[in-house]
Length: 254
Ligand code: PEP
Image 1 (cartoon, rainbow, N blue to C red):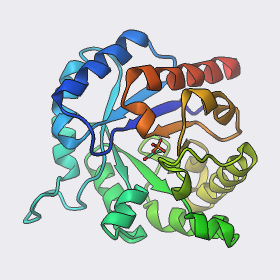
Image 2 (image 1 turned 180 degrees about the horizontal axis):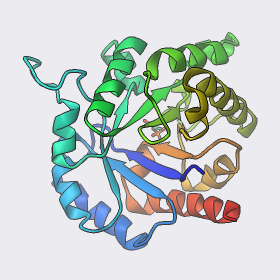
Image 3 (image 1 turned 60 degrees about the horizontal axis):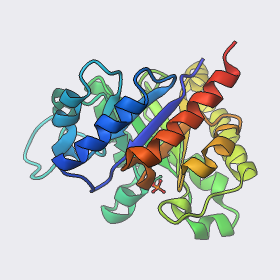
């Protein structure tokens, strides 16, 4: 009922030379058994969208402005990402929350902009190490979910990525029990927030996912895929993650 999703976030990495990695990824997965999305820097969105040809690879932005146009130097509207070929946009990544002071209300406004432009918003949330050590993980992610997911969110226009800040780019990964606890909590909270559609919203785990740990993470209930940073830059690293997700999807197929 929820199509599994492997999404790659290239962050501020990549030039046109990096598109050869996309070719290698598409060659490795000509007919993927899961949804595959790459979110390159905005400068590469149009080129990547053209490069995929008829392959179902999805393309995403990494941020958008809440407004459709205006005097916002350096910002990019959701409609512009859509026009360049994006069907997804990451909003509320912890690096933007930290580097640019983005709060939950702004993240929700960005998610609304993605919906307005006809795109899927990948809404990121997650606790810091300090918050986890204080035993506040569920309180924090619950608050982020309530305030960052806009009204009108559905399984068709919204994906949630649970990304513990302390696991991003660090090689540290929560235990499968810790992931299961948060994902189960988020599933229930989503249903309380948006009703029946909560069962259709995909919940991704993100934070140091690699080929070597993907299979055990994908076996956790309510993990519908992954948002992958560093390991999405090279086809040789991302492809085993996609393959592990394909295997998980095949196992649960009727
Ligand atoms: C991310 O930045 O969304 C992420 C999960 O990064 P990494 O996979 O490198 O930890």
